[in-house]
Amino acid sequence: MLVILYIALLIIYAAAVTNSIPGFAIFAVSALFFLYAFNKFKAKSNKTTAFMQIMCLSIPLSWRNIFGGDYGDLAITWFYIFGLFLSIHLLALRKEIKLNRANFSLVLLLAFAVVFSVIPLLLTNPDYFDQGLTQFIILTFHNIIIFLAVLKGRNISNMNVLAVEKSYILAGLATSIGLIIQYFLFRVGISIGVIKFYLNRQSFHFLISDVSHASLYLATTALLSIQLIGKSKKNVKMWIIPIIILIGAAITSARTGLVAFFIVYLIYIFVGQKGISRKVMSLVIGVVALFSAYSLYKNVRQQSSIRDILFDSSDRDNGYEAAYNLFLQNPIFGHGFSIDYISSVMGQPIPHLSFLQYLVHGGIFYTLILFGVIFVAFLYAKKRKMNASWLILLTVLGTCLVPDIFSTRYITLLIVLVFLENETANQLATKNSNVGISLANMARLNFSPIGKKMGVNRGQ
Image: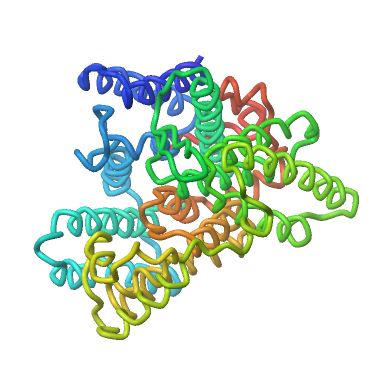
């Protein structure tokens, strides 16, 4: 029931893009759905997990505001509202704060990131200050919620991490279904959601205004579903989930997610999987998926050969050079926030490389702090063999091809999940349970196979 309601909610938001639907009606329907979902999730886990799950479900809606309008018109989304609720919840937890040396250093790093972000805000050109302020708020949200996760975290058990992961996959699967519906409706003359037209293609966005971020987001959900399939005893029929998600990614016509996905997927096969037979099967399925995705991709983006997909820079080299030269003009403090302002100074679009973009925005020290937190989270997750380590790697690799990693939303959620996991509970649950994925319990959002074996962690 929840899955059907969720897909219906996404379709309503998509219909509101091209049709006049009262904003208060969209707000009311959304609020009722998320209240229902939160209570359903909380009944099976705890408040922390439930907040993380509804944050997962709100990701596809986070490029639209709470009234169904464009994010640029009103930068208030369900994702940030639920992130605020989670932050307040973590602050209110009566939990002793215990930090080892590494976590203490990370807390200091995050505190410095919040303080230092004021410098590029002050340097922002007054004509672009509104956009710069929005960027500042997004970065501050990102840093503070991770700060609280490190400070008050380690309260989500392995089974609850699995519940969050399944909600993350569900959101990606529902988004892909929405993209497929949008594509076929467009073919018969009906338009819903965001569609943009270029010289040689139509770009299907569904609800996510940045199509490259949409493609990369779907790639992370596909990879996570494959990771859970690898831990399932009955895994053959479950491949329909990542296949549907990759079809959605191909329909977007953005190559970022697909290219990054197949690079990381190959690494995952040879490094992250055990057993020759499993590696061979994954490789064969990967090759089939690659050519299937490519065939569909060519259908929506004509005249794109494999060579074009892999090596065509789309004139990004000039942007890299211009951004690097601009960075050298003020390497310590940068030139301030606002993508539009930096683009106007460069005379071309913002560089499609997130690290270089933030060198221009905030200078070398601020950028090293921001990306240092991501690197620490990756190492932390990798050491604990968390699925999120691969998703962080995929996101970072993908944002070497597109700008603004911190506007993806999902990088924030993944890092928060890393630091909320309870390591002791994780080791115990992993030892005693099958953490696979199935279509049946995905459809019911039913995590009872693990709950029956381990009991449900309802503490916080």
